[in-house]
Length: 112
Image 1 (cartoon, one colour):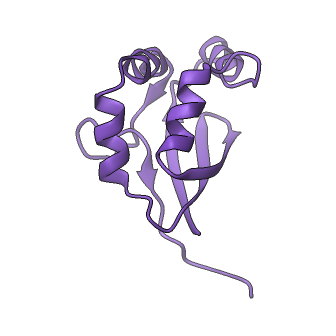
Image 2: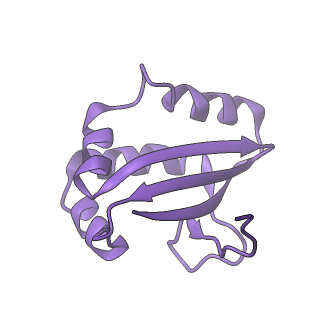
């Protein structure tokens, strides 16, 4: 198993943040999106928020690959529709590459 942690900002608007959280409630998340996440080898995912900063923890299979997931997403019209909807709420971190949403975080500490 691999674990990845990523960060992203939301547009700092309480109404947009509330709507973003609405779409991430279990009863509102599109099944095609959760299927695409699982099909890519992501075995667990959690998203946390403080203010307008999001933090995502992903647990994956050992064979998970971000490039393969990106290719799968490009070929999936429902994922593309979801991503367009999410851009309404999201804004890239200032140091993100052009077009990059979630930025991979570096682990700097671990208590063993």
